[in-house]
Every structure is written in structure tokens, then in C-alpha cells.
Image (cartoon, rainbow, N blue to C red; front, side, top):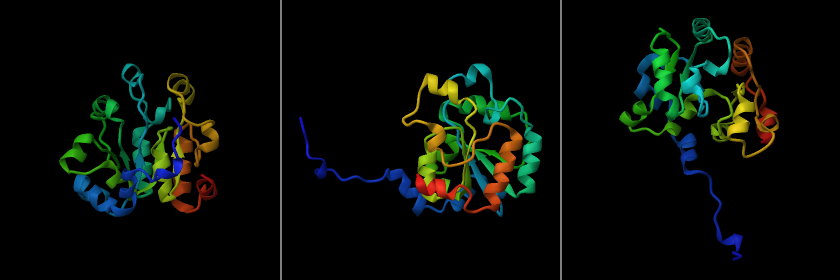
Length: 205
């Protein structure tokens, strides 16, 4: 059956209205209090990893990573990294980070959002930078025209298991790709100091 496409109204995703209408920094303080005051907020939101439970947590999927050095780097650059694990990964992530005493690395749990009566998208616009692997959240964050960093270390296995809606990821992802801690810290510094870093690529998207 053929239908007239003109009878449909094409709108944005309703959750994206929060990106423009919410006070993300204020909402964030309802969860983290003064911990984020006067700091640059960076969101890290990876997609679900089906083999994480069996292989353990690897932050950003890097083989080598020093949480203590990264914490010092964040402090030096007046940053707080908010890690929002995928809901299916949250339990194993929380168990892993119980052993670390970090000042600038905060985990945002689903329970935090529920207790505060907040939607995740009511917080996202507090972030100056988004870090992800290849989660589709970057399409939404793109509406804010802010820098994004991609850590697609496991992209080949992910592509084999689940695949992508568009090809190629390298072409479409509007930000630097990092594969080590040094590269990540370098790109965070670039994003903090160069407002229009990858701006042309974001505009093209």
C-alpha cells in the first residue's frame, strides 16, 4: 500500500529538547553537589559491550591505562569526567571502581537519575566535551556543536557482532579517534583550548 509522505510531520527526538531547555550544570549539582563547581565537565558515554562481563573493565578499552595519572591530568585541566556506563554494564563498572580513590572521575548511575527525578538528557548540555566509543549518543550531542572524542578501540569486533547503521564510521564520526591514554589526553587538551576544533566536520554532519 502506497501512502502520501506529505501527511507526516518530521520532528526531532523529544528527548533532544532537553539539550536546549535544561540547565544541565544545575541539574548535575543535584547529584554531585559542589564536586563539579568551577570545573569543566566531560561526559564519557560508551555503548553496551556484550563481552565486558567476561573480560573485565578496560577504561576506554585501552590495553594500558593509569587511572591515577588520568585523575591528575583532569585536576591539572580543571576537569571532572562523568562516566555514564550503559545500564547493562553498570554493575560491573561500579564493582571495578570501588577499589580506586579518584577525585575527578565520577560515575553517574541510573539510580542517581531516578532519585533526582532527572532524565539523562537534562544533564548532557553541562558537558564541554563528549567522549564515546561509537555510541549513537554522539548524534544527539552534535546538536550542541561541541567537541567530541572517539575511542573506537573495539570497533572491528563491534561491527562483526552488531554492525552500524551507516558506513563508514571513520567518515561519519566528527571528532578525533584515540587509541591510547596519551592520545586521549592530548585531544582533551585540544578540545578545551580550541573552540572550533573539528568544527567544519561537525557542520558537515
